[in-house]
Length: 161
Image (cartoon, rainbow, N blue to C red; front, side):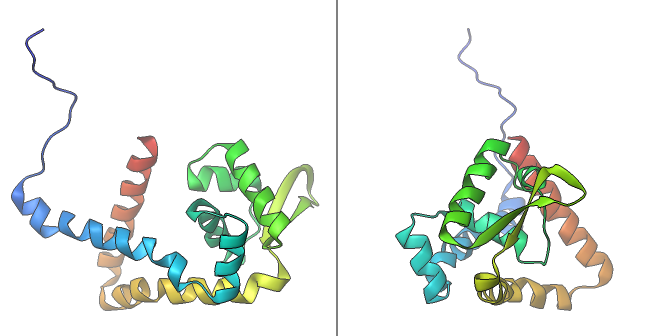
């Protein structure tokens, strides 16, 4: 063995770091702040029931008036079915979500925000999405497509890990 390690990793060039990568820590900070920016009612539920950011990711998927199955949530979040099922169970016990059988397929379990927390969760998600929506308003349609494609590709690459 010659001591060289070549696992495909490379240090990005300075232009890339200064042009794009320097903003990644700012985004991470923004997402970490979500807990402190939650409405008091939601924050109390998260703290009292030891809910995590992963639980918040499930709620975010439900805030757009969707009723996905547990399997669809698993695919969207890039985590195992059992993990999503456990998180949905936690959120259901707290009263943030409701589960029901798909009327078209009794084997599928659909998940939705509970009526008691739907308005709060949607308002919170709208507040959190506002900066990104303002950015999209400044971009041309083709820039929006490129930006969205880049985010999607980055997320997929991270989940492939």
